[in-house]
Length: 55
Image 1: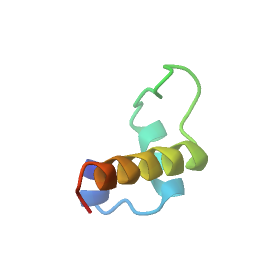
Image 2: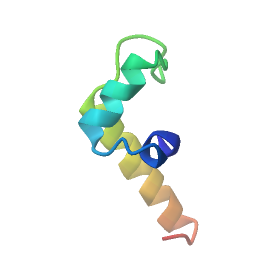
Image 3: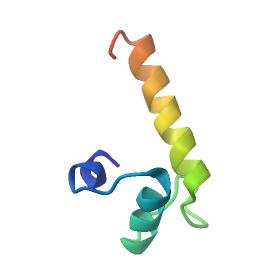
């Protein structure tokens, strides 16, 4: 997702759409990316960074 953001893909819906268009498998390997899934992953990533002492 960071690579997509660096390419200018912003917003959870746009990230989900880009992941689907590029054929990136979901974490479970089935289904498609949704805005909700992307939001949850970004939230967990941010929480992990804070817990690890990052910002």
